[in-house]
Length: 325
Image 1: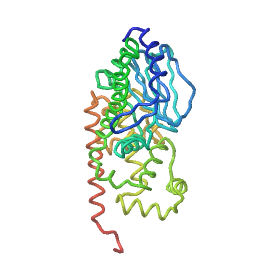
Image 2 (image 1 turned 30 degrees about the vertical axis):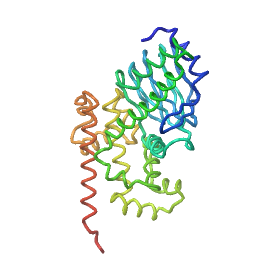
Image 3 (image 1 turned 135 degrees about the vertical axis):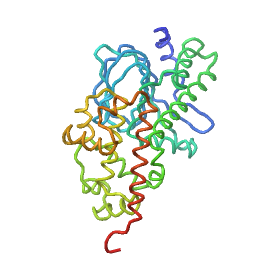
Image 4 (image 1 turned 120 degrees about the horizontal axis):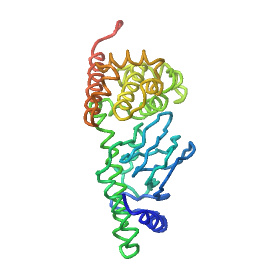
């Protein structure tokens, strides 16, 4: 933890001088920089930009689109545009944060694609980020901004730009580690299929019908069902089940949320049914899965294995002609 005065001095300098960051591949507008001690929370809200936060000390909870995440020292997370979220802490947390959005007209296509991918992932949440590049760069930025100010303005701007790029890179790396096994499927999720997957991920805690998704995309149920079947070789219920299990595995491995709450958050009717489906799909009961997940590599390995099985299962099914063909 840095000296408290560093946070107040750096806040003042950064908000006055670093509104737009310019680099080789991107231009980034920063809405605000913040370092707030004893932050006890806020009301549920949304905004049009990305907000990246890091917990320095204290504990609390982060509520994001119906899911509850524990906040502890070392937690790095990102609230996406238009996502409904809030935080709460009984004792207060020391929270670092900044809000940003890319300036598309001044950024490379590759950089904009990275932002698009971030928006597609449901969980931008890393529980053990201490010692990572973004955190170390963030600390260096705050120290430089509080101590040197205008004398090293160019260096501070470079540090800030590097911080943004390193955060994006770390989130993408973390998210992709859970999707590697299903990359062949993800490559096909273009256009309408991306919207289908996003809708499912945003509504996992509720009952879902094909008609709901079709209506949101202005398609008929027949059109959407055929599109999913032709492009992914899966049915709508099978995609929903895959996403429910994937999110449940994430919550079991990375949080201490009770099993009953995870069952509710992932749309299962009861903890008994959740346990039954999870055990069948993952090969181990939820409670055993949680005990076996000692680190992020273990969680990712389990999710990789499950997604690989799903991909293989439905690839095989696509090779088997249905009656009438």
